[in-house]
Image 1 (tube, rainbow, N blue to C red):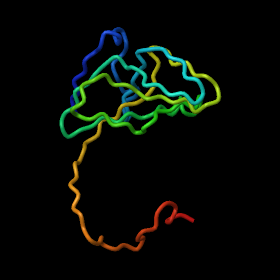
Image 2: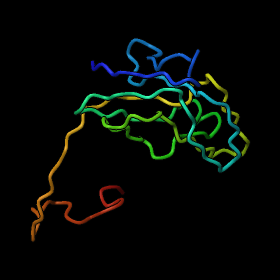
Image 3: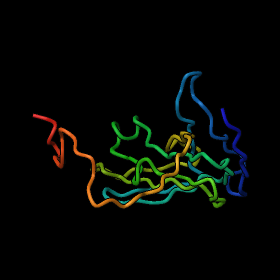
Length: 145
C-alpha cells in the first residue's frame, strides 16, 4: 500500500474522498464535483474537487466504471488515463457518452475508478536489427484465427 496526499479543493467540499467500495476492490471510486449533461457523442473533463501528490515511482490510472459503460454507454476516454507523480493540478475524468441518450452526471455520483500502480521507466537503445521471434512482424490479429 502507498500513501497518497490529497488536497480537497473548494468545489469538492462535502464530497467523499476516493475510497474502495469493498475490501478486495482494485480501484478507488471517485465522484463528480460538478453536474453536467453529456449529449450522445459528447465528452467532458469532469471535475473531482481534489488534487493529489503521488509518490515518485508510481502513477494513478483512471479507469471507467463498468456499470456506467454497460447501462448508459458512458466511459472514460484515454483509458486507462495516467496521472503522473509530478502533476499537482485537479484530477479530472474525461467522460464520453457513447450511448444514444443524453446522460446527466450528478455532483457526488461515482464516475470512475483510480488504480495506483508502480511505474518502470525505460531507456531505448537503437539497433540496426532486432532479435527474431517465431511471430516476427505479424501484427494485429496475426496470432488469432
